[in-house]
Image (cartoon, rainbow, N blue to C red; front, side, top):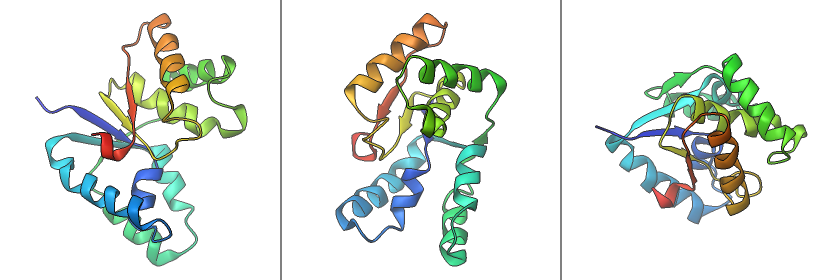
Length: 149
């Protein structure tokens, strides 16, 4: 059975971001491995990609994720995301990050993959998210960067 992987918006975004060639190359290598997994994004990712101003880039990004299954930001995920915010794991001003984690958790993803080292892919966040998850009856989730998969 394939493991389930949730991609936040940073992963497809870096695929075409030439400002950081090393990170871009790692993302492309990661993308080539995705066939071994069930890959998911969310309607939140789609909304964030739709906001890209460069129309050509936006179309390339949407094409890149077109084969990913799309999960909804459900009321259950919103409630869990607010728990992350209430417990100061994710700052309120960037609630979308809390919702990415919550969507992945509620939908029982094995991994959440992100390039967001500031708020998501860091030890304290991983530990605190999993404490809240367990307290609320959810399983733990691995929050990792693309090269770790």
